[in-house]
Amino acid sequence: MSLWSQTSKTTVVSPSANSTQRVTSGASPRGNAANAAGGGNNPPTRFLGMTAPLSLTPPDAVDRERTDRLVAAMEPHDVYETEAELNHRMEVLASLNSLVKTWIRDLSLEKNMPPTLAESVGGNVYTFGSYRLGVHNRGADIDALCVAPRHVLREDYFGTFYELLKQQPEVSELRAVPDAFVPVIKMSYDGIEIDMTFARLALKEVPDNQQLDDPQLLRNLDQKCVRSLNGCRVTDEILNQVREHQ
Image 1 (cartoon, rainbow, N blue to C red):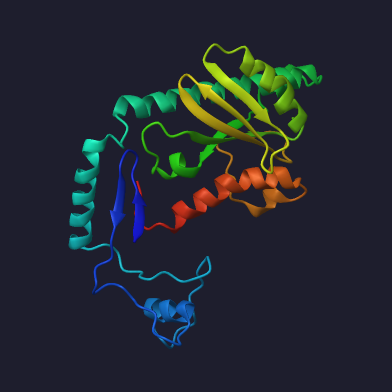
Image 2: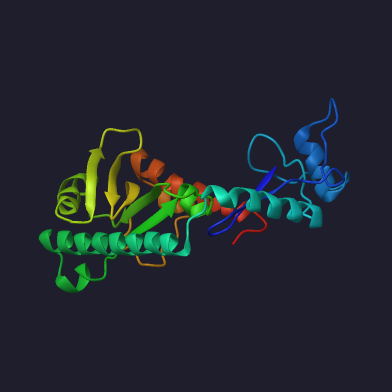
């Protein structure tokens, strides 16, 4: 069963019998799928993961009809968020992103950075997990990542930023777990549960269009930063591997 995500609804595509490439006994699953994709005489196609896909065939009319029936069956159970609820999530993330930028700017000034530079060092909040994939259900939390430039330390994140969150009227149920395998700050921000990790890049600034897929970004980072970044990197790679997503 292949999973294709939408913003507010999840489309599940069940391969039809005539489109599924089955692995025969004694054959290599990876080689069999590669042959199906490119022919027996072509070089094997490289796939990520332990096994190759069961099928590389896009969904047909029967698959889409079954998806529509599944969505119709789930709608009465209120598993999908309304447009207002989705917009509220976006507003919460925009507010949190603005708070992160303000914190990094003020912290930069405290560290004697010239004001003109402090205004441009940036910093961003990224999302990953079910929300980023578009497969979250109503009331689900948001997995987020705070990315800061090199002069902002993890101690700052769990120190001054945590104290700043305490002062926000929208924030409740605030708790920090700095010793976790992936250190995280958990909170409820205006009614939305958020788990936010932290990563410090070896860059002077983190612009709004900073991408996280470049492996060179991981060079010389501590393992906690690498683990935090991998949440976003893996999620983006999943989206890149899905042929149809919105």
